[in-house]
Length: 403
Image (cartoon, rainbow, N blue to C red; front, side, top):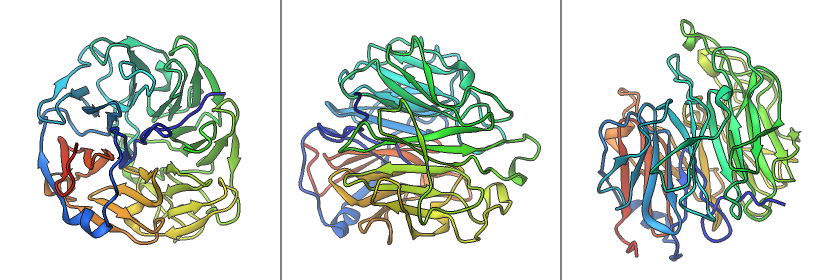
């Protein structure tokens, strides 16, 4: 059976989030939460012409190597921890890159999913999945062009040619090419293993680090209209969470005690050990400025400790709920520590009940400028990378040496 783990160490591969937790090799002792916040500082490392960056990933075996996907600038790469960046995918027919994944078993193998999933009236569509086998020097088409908007990619940590793709589908109309797709030959052929309906796609995927064949998928029923973008609900009855226990071959919809009722918006996922699953749910005051949830206070961060059989709402803060960010990540060494990004980067050390700002970056966190950190990469070397509006940022834990 395939193992779908996001590797932070040898057991779990990094999770693209709204804050993505990634591995860089050696493990350091975790500092106290107060020390973490006090020891951080940001500095701008560019580049300045990539557009906003929805995705950043690192290479566990190469701690200075990172990639980010730009909203209109393709894929960028640094091999010196952000001191210099180079565009490596200018030849792609679709410059909007939402999802990037590096194969844990072979860091030269990359997959890029094109087309953004942020709720915008001008959201650009993509042309499917692209693959590189030489660290981004060259790319080839790997199918799924009709999916148009790809939210997430998971690669089997032992087999670089086996992967799952979460596809949102056509953003401005119905189509069948949405849901979860699985390939065992590097994208030459695909099987649609989760097909919900012509209006509902998949925007996020998460794997259980202890049982990597267990995968969770966040479904999102969304339809946009260029002339009514902010006045239509970005949600519906199709939105929800699905679970697979066979590496993404088959799926079952989750509900369980405590799961919010009514039409839901975008959902972001993170999985931890001990059958814990986090889901950040947009449900209030309503996607697209239109109320649509049964209960006005049903959105926020939900947590399950039994693999999705039951849920509890641990935090209902409005900043957690978004059709635009909706990404979270959990520290694979401490399932109580959760990270989230939006207009700032926040951390919780008690399973999501309470949060504190990890840092604030005026260049990317200004609500006036409609900016924010989309996703990032936090390594056990105590380096952090986050993708953001306008540029890529780097934060270094100065109190702990990186190597």
